[in-house]
Image 1 (cartoon, rainbow, N blue to C red):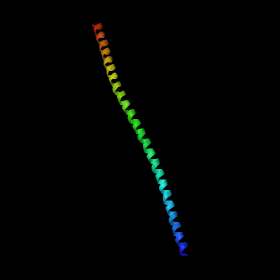
Image 2 (image 1 turned 30 degrees about the vertical axis):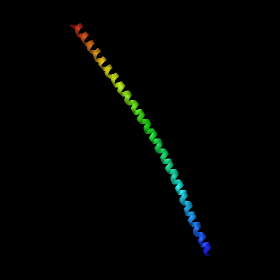
Image 3 (image 1 turned 120 degrees about the vertical axis):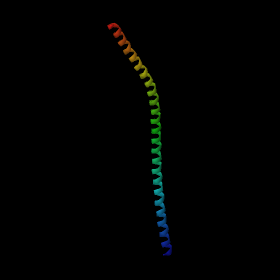
Image 4 (image 1 turned 45 degrees about the vertical axis):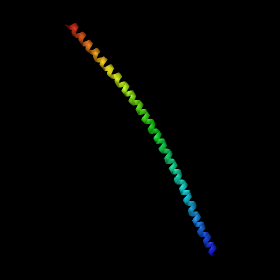
Length: 89
């Protein structure tokens, strides 16, 4: 009887241990999933930073072009106005 009671306690402890090990395995899987998700988000953020740098360089280049085109436009308007005033005179 004493031996049987002792075996029952050992079986209960083994059952609890088995349950704890399975819970640890589930938690490890969840952590792995979270780490993979974080890696994916970091990669996406890095890609967005690269895109932002490219856009910044494009904007700087385009702003110079637009500035020159605007100056050329106003030079042309001034020339046309000057010619118009010269012809009216």
